[in-house]
Length: 190
Image (cartoon, rainbow, N blue to C red; front, side, top):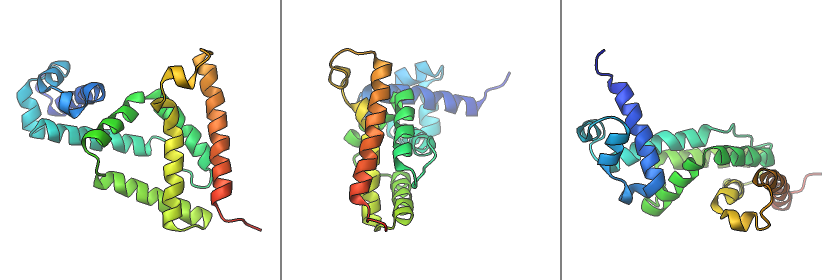
C-alpha cells in the first residue's frame, strides 16, 4: 500500500485541531502533532510550511465547519440560536478554538468577516433593518449561543442539578430572551 498524502494531511489537521484546542498556538508543539497524526514533523513543514500556517489551515477548515454547521435562518433567529447552542455543546472544541484564535490572532480572517457580513445582511433584509443593526443582532445571537459553553459549570448550574436538564431549561430561556431582544430591537410592524 502506497503513501497517501491526502490521508496524512487529514490526520495532521485533526491532530493539530486537538493540540490547538488544548493549548493554543503558542503552547502547541509540532512534535506532539506529528506523533498524534502518525506522521513526521517534516510532513507538517512540507504540507503547511510552519506551525503558524498549520494553525491557519486548521482555522480555515474548522471555522468553515462552524460557520456552516447550523443552517442559518434569519427569519427564525431564536431557533437558529438554539441550534447553534446545540452544535457548540455537541462539539465544544470548535468554540475553544475560536477563543484561542481571538486571544492569539484577534483580527478577523477574510472567511470569518465574509460569513458574518453575509449573515448580518440576510438579517437586515429579513427584518427591514440597516446592515449595522443586522450585525448587532447577529452578535447578540452568537453571544447568546456561546454563553453556556463559556460559563463555568459551577456558575451556570450552581445547585448541581442534572446538567442535561439544566441545559434544556437554559436553551428555552435563551431562545425566549433572544426573541424578547429582537422584539425590542426590530421596528414595529402594523
